Image (spheres, helix red, strand yellow):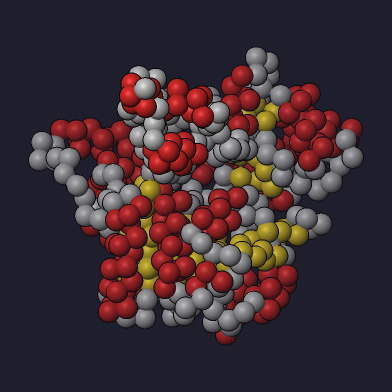
Length: 466
């Protein structure tokens, strides 16, 4: 009898074990396989069976499968497609006329310099990033003669690409901008916009993300009046995410005169500009032209954020090189902002990687390397402009219904073709030409070898599918 009593757990022990079994997340003595730290051979699983309890298969059993990121799924589908005619117009990266990635010659040169420099080590960077990268990156965006730089009222934070720069800016604004109800501050993004804009600001905790008019589908151009009206109607101190150049996905930018009207309304309505600058130099081939809007707003006295990406214009896609510029009214305000951003970075990625930032900083700080980089960037921009002209001329020569001047009116990597979702579906399924459902195409996916095929396929889709 004594032996039997020894084998049976006491009532209090059973109750305790039952609580542990039904709450495996709170009791880390139950591992992922269900084996436990029970007092006898067989452990928790055996005891659970004796008590008639069902062990959970996994604490993650109820996690739903997320939808894949569309543009990456499109690339995966393209790679699996065995058809020799296939064309990928979805990927957001530069390609040569041979459909290959291009490592900029200046980047290769700087990489070799860095590799040969034995004084470089792998110590942590400062939390806010490599100082010479931050200062040079900010300088090419704002210009050498920027009043904000001269008055020492700018600062910056190195980010993990443009996305990281956006996220740090969004996190700061949600914590510190517009009083105590920061999360409820309206954030306006263009319609359409890069899909990550919505995701970044939502993930940062903003609860009121709205869209403003931007694309006029009937004119295949900018809806300036709709955009200005939305700004007039926006609550004061709302945040507006603006594309500095080469709007993604439309490729349609305001003219300088239109930017002046936009700035005028935003200043009068106390709206906060948050620029996303992912394509400086890559859009037109001219660094200064592509930075015109940001520089104008700074010259007009705005406090603003500007998220820079060096993925496209340096071809450093997987190095994740970004910079968040802060422009304030005075240096003291900027220092306090940076002190809070340092706290945010510390708990997000602690401090950033060095290699890509060193490549950019070395290039921008050397007149010789800077000149070579500018030529490399123009090479990419010129190829894109050529592909725009060639595609338009072919569609017009085929007599494709509709107008196609918007292809050459737009700038940058992407073109908003105006193709419908059904026409896109036809191109993917019947012609093995991969593009996003919105009709956005990457002009870099076009080459002298596939232009005729793409043009005739678009013509066929437009004439067959209404």
